[in-house]
Image (cartoon, rainbow, N blue to C red; front, side):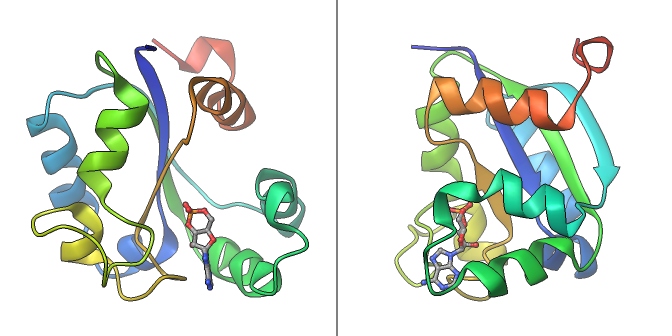
Length: 138
Ligand code: CMP
């Protein structure tokens, strides 16, 4: 399968000073960073990015959380990137995440779960294009 995934280090991870540790674990696990920036999503950005969740009871909370401070957005490359990155980050709920995964180490709750990983090759392309211009991806 594909070589590319998209990630965000979410506001809670940035607030707690975990950018360096998380990026280190990502690169030490064989992912190459091919685009990256510190940015902050607007309410409209978050509503668009998470449109698939708009009927969920946690949608308002999710938009508030994802817009409350800066995030690190990045594109990552590795063989089997989407699946391998989801293994590295662990389950959505940190209580269910495997020992050593990024969410197990850095996430506070199912809502504030430190990191995003694309769930398919198609969504990786859509999400990367949402955050980056072509000339920002290497
Ligand atoms: P992620 O899987 O990256 O994208 C959807 C996000 O919605 C998820 O991370 C969490 O941040 C959030 N989320 C998912 N389930 C819940 C929930 N039950 N309560 C609050 N937030 C949630």
